[in-house]
Length: 241
Image (cartoon, rainbow, N blue to C red; front, top):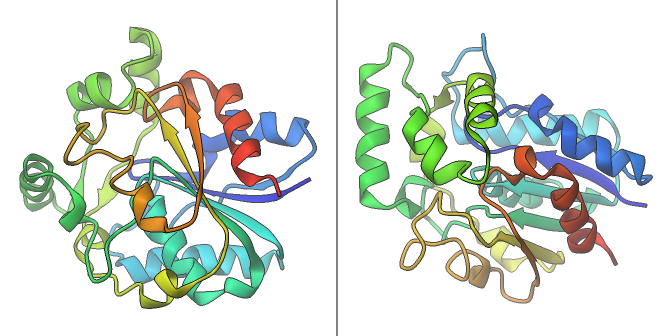
């Protein structure tokens, strides 16, 4: 059985993993779902990408975890790549689930299509704490289009604002790209959170991993809410020896 640490994406926090985590625990796995620094409701948003990384490093080391299968979703991919540079000795495999794998020296923002960059910059500038809220129409049509209207609305209410500075920080990632840690990429085939084609997840992001295991998964960017059992099965496949 695996020791899994699941790192959420933007606008999420650790507790939102619970439906997936329950399926995995019921199958005998040890599952941890830490919240990345600056994420969640009622917390300060003045964090940078180093703070985000350090919060996951601290969660793993505080629990004295070893042989960790570390999964990152979306923005979480940038975090697990950095965590792999800091504590590779505690990790067994990295899993990127429709996650960013930034090119060396790029920020997350550099990997976004222009219309997202413009929207997020304007939203952060208009906020009082340099954060970005998720617009419901974007959530409904591009992130969770496989949900019914009730689930789309209820999950949107659970989201929190996203700290903007971590989007802007340049990530060297030299050590990550030199790492020989095994890697997997889970690709949700109906995920349109990044527009398919030039800006799509797979193979644009997955292809940067070099040698990796590909697991295809039916569902949207938020299949964690719409089919948590199906995502749990994909995680098991991606995590196995």
